[in-house]
Image (cartoon, rainbow, N blue to C red):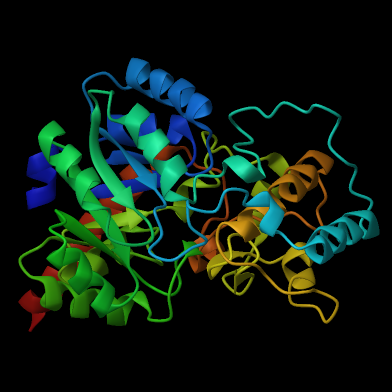
Length: 371
């Protein structure tokens, strides 16, 4: 499959793997796709450690980075974001932690890179994202930069051009895609309602062909509800030049997901996800749990705007993970979670997707011959 993006990035298959796990990045890139590391959850120091490891293991294969530089949020001109979090919200979160017997973090707790950044360090502001990108731009294997919530700033675009890095961004509406095209992006990711993480209202089947037509000849990747070769074939039939997959890697042995939420993912059906502002302050699809339910209860004081919401839940999420609470455990995931019923390695996932993709094409060609 030599789409234009495959040719530019020297890929064997147009499969872009969004992940927070360095092992997935390396395995997918080595298997002929391209791994894209979600950097927003890391501190600059943690990101440097992850990228050092990736660059050492990946050889001459390309990799990418995904950041969150939102169009609208509580801005960098605020001197003390922590002070903007209402005491009512802090007290309510602690009440929920006590309700489910979730222990506090040890005093002077040091987070590992696996656990990510603390509340004040989450990369959901332009200031922190710029620090992350400054580090990432120093790695020769970096060939793709994606912004999850909006068109990247012009100076970031210019730096990517200088370094030969392709720039993409996610779009949940046609108007978002048109803004990306106007901004000069190299490709656009049309992400449907069923996708995991931050996602909009329009489904993939409806959104992708509209975006393809609206931004032509800018290449489009399809995202949301894609975890198999049949779904990949459908995306390509809709006009996409490749697929952007995130959820499908979560139950792989290489995944960063802890045992408790991973088993919940394996056991889940496609009805077991919900779009919630609990994670970041913007709608994001996650696995249902008592934690997501608490955020829509009558007692909840409501969610906060980005990045304040991410800040207030960061320590609570770490406490939930450390406690291995099955009731509260959650993870960002799409509706394809109902298809992720076992623990397959990344290479096997890639092989199965490509095999089924070819089988789907053969079946469709066979229908033409029969006619």
